Length: 312
Image 1 (tube, rainbow, N blue to C red):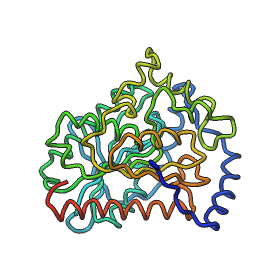
Image 2: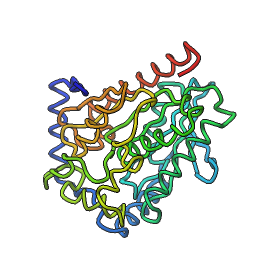
Image 3: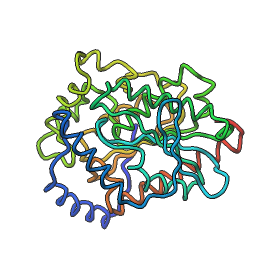
Image 4: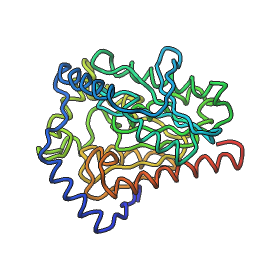
C-alpha cells in the first residue's frame, strides 16, 4: 500500500468533526480572477504589520528575497521552506509560527522563500524563484556541510517538488538534500481525479472551481501541456530524489495528488489523515499537533542519519 492511514484517536476525530462543522460555514478559497487575491494579500500584509514576529533576517538569494530564522546555537541542518497560498497569496512571514516550531524542535535554520506571486508572474516564474533560492542555499558558504530538508505546503508542495526535479540537473547540489516534507501539495495542474470530482461541499477550497482555477493560472496551455514535468511534478522522474514524508486529509480535494505521487516517488512515506481538510496543520486541533510533532521528529531523523554517515 503506497500510503498509511494516520492513527488518530477517537477524541481527536470527534474534535476534528466539530471543527469541520465550523469550517463549513466559511467561504471557500477561490481563484476566479486576479483582483480578489490582491485584496487578500493586502489584508495579509496589513495584519502582519501588527503581529509580533520572531527575529528574522531578510536576504537576497540572488534576486529572490528569503527570510531566515536561526536557532540560538549552531544549526544541525537547514530547512528550505516554500509557503502555500494557491500561488496567488502568501509570503515567507506567513510561515513564521510553523518555522519557529522547526527551529526550536530540530535545531535547524529555516530559509523561507518569498517567491513572486502568480497574480503578476506566470507559475513558471515562481518555479524559477524557488529553484534560484534552492541553488543559493545549497551553494552558500554559511550553510556548507549542513544537511538540507525541503518543506512545502499546498502550492508550496508543488513548488518544492518541482524544485527537486529541476535540481536533478545539478546532482552535486541535489545530493545535499536529505529529505522532502510535503503537506497536501498540488502535483497535477490539469487536475487529478479527486480534484475533478470535488463537489460543492468541499471545505476551505472551492472544489467545483479548482480545475478552472488551474487553467486560469496556466493560460494558453492544453491539459496535455499542463501534465508536463516539472510544471506538473506528478509526471516527473523521481529516481535519485531524497526520501519524502507526505500528508493529506481524507476531505481534501487534493487527496489524489499526494496518493498518486507517493506511488511514483521511491522512498516516499505518505499518510492519509482521517476527517482532515486542506490546511489542517494550521488548525487548533490535536491531530494537527500530532502530525507536526511526527514531521519534526522525521526531520531530525533525516538530519541525524546524514550526520552519522557524512552524506545524504
